[in-house]
Image 1 (tube, rainbow, N blue to C red):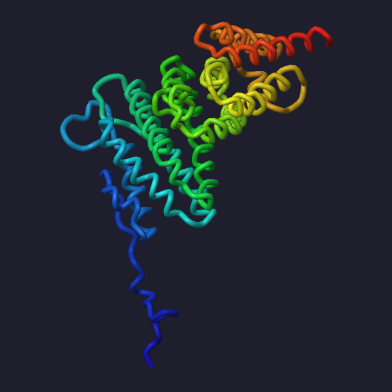
Image 2: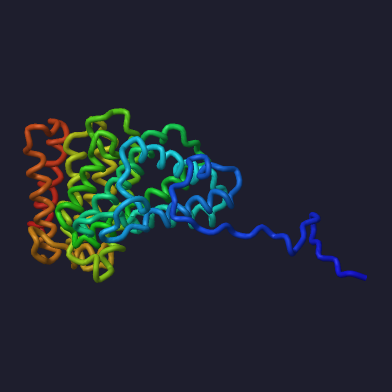
Amino acid sequence: MAPNNTVKGGKSKGKERAEPKTEAAMPFGKQFAHTDKAIRDQAVRNLTAFLSAGGDGVEGEGGYTRLEEKEMAKLWKGLFYCFWMSDKPLVQQALATELSELLLRINPRTTGDRAAARLDASLAFLEGFWTALVREWHGIDRLRIDKYYMLIRRYVNASFRLAARAEWSPAAVGGINAILTGPHGPMSWQDASVPMSLATHLGDVYLAELDKVMASEEGAGAPLIELLRPHIELVARTRNPTLLRRLQESVFAPLLDALKSDGDAMRNIATKSTVDGRPVDAAALRAALLRALFAEAAQESTRDSNRRRLYALVRAEEDEEDDE
């Protein structure tokens, strides 16, 4: 009697679907949002291969080049809904990691400066991520919101690693800051349509992810004050008192506390940061942060109510320091 090669459901063991070959090609948007997980996964693999398929001196067709704004918007709409379709925690975690790693895998075709081209293309991809998230945020239901918060955390970490890879250059740090605070950025104080929850979540995860990245040898030497510039500008100019309070509580208060203690909280930030390109100790770093907050409060564009809050914060911290 011939052996039975069928399994439950009538499928043959010998007829399992073979995994398609990965191709370095831009997938169609509908593939990212397909109901079949295998097709979505293959689309992400193809995209990863495509984004990383550059090479020095490559001419003609083939290989990734920086996308125009409309094409980037189409790509990120597809990726947004690819993540939307992920419905199991482990799948969501793996996909969040895979999507955030794309930021560091980008290797565009160029005949010029390889590092500069990679940074420029990565920043454009990061801007596409934040533009899509701001645009689609209000449509995310409460059952899916947590996984998008996780995706944001992954992208914050990847953004810091991108800047660290560029040795925390002004081009990298300034580029990231410009995206966060720009017209379509999650920390824009000028656009009232940007959801406040994006800025508050960034405040919740920012320092923790920075401290993780600074634990590595590559991550040391981060210019802390410049990295905090989006938060400093936002607390000075936001019209939302709740957002101002949240950022004080999640960013500035815990950081100032960590910089005056010998505990383990934010230890890498406290010991491996730089100010004006020079390594400093925690006390000098704390003083530099207070000066930055005071200087921002003094700006003409700072809202009067925010100015009073910032002056009060700086004064309270300095008085507490004098009492010790």
